[in-house]
Length: 122
Image (cartoon, rainbow, N blue to C red; front, side):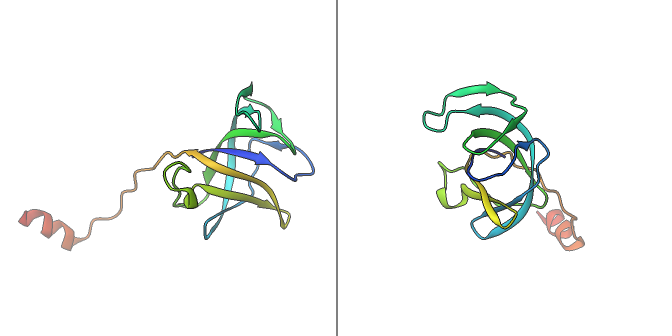
C-alpha cells in the first residue's frame, strides 16, 4: 500500500526499513517502511523531493508500506474509517497517515475434496 504519512513526533530520522506498529481501525500490526517514494509539502501536497534518504518530525511523505501479516484496509477516498492509520513506536504516536493506494495480493488457498466435487457437478 502507498499511504501519505505525516511524521509528528520522532526523535531521529525515519529511513527505509523502519518497522513500527501500525494501528488501523481495530488492527495493530507491525509494518515495514519498504521505500520512501517522495517527500511532499504538508499543506499543499506538492512534491518536494524524489526518493528522499530520510524523513524527520514535521515532514510529510508518500511511502511504500508492507504489513508483516495480512491487513484489511481501503483507500481513504473509498472508505475513510479503513483508510486512516496511526504509526506507533516507543509507546507513543510517531506519525499519522491516509492510504492513497492499495495493492491487493492474490491469495490462493488449499482446495478441499468437497470443493473439488462441487466444481465437477457444475
